[in-house]
Length: 99
Ligand SMILES: [Zn+2]
Ligand SMILES: [Zn+2]
Image: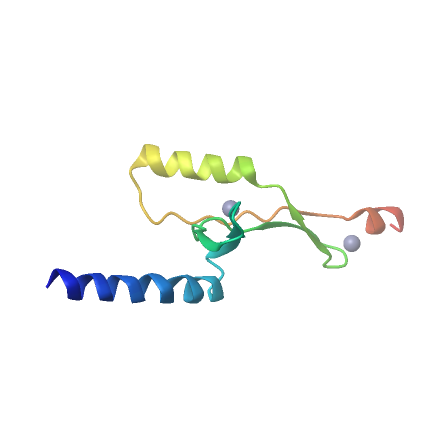
């Protein structure tokens, strides 16, 4: 029983990272010895974009504080599986210039 469990565990370990990486949930990183391994990236670690209402241009923005805030309110409220949508919109520099 213990031996079978180990075998299943190992094959799961080798299969899981590839599928997780395909799903975009892990980063492939290398340690000092050059060994590739996978670091789990929580699904909540997504990206936020600043969107231009004029031309639709979008650019990725630093959302570290938003993520920290979202994690904190989830923790404080006791809610789980908390998602959020933050999409600031405005006029990009180009649209502002040509207005
Ligand atoms: Zn624009
Ligand atoms: Zn976010």
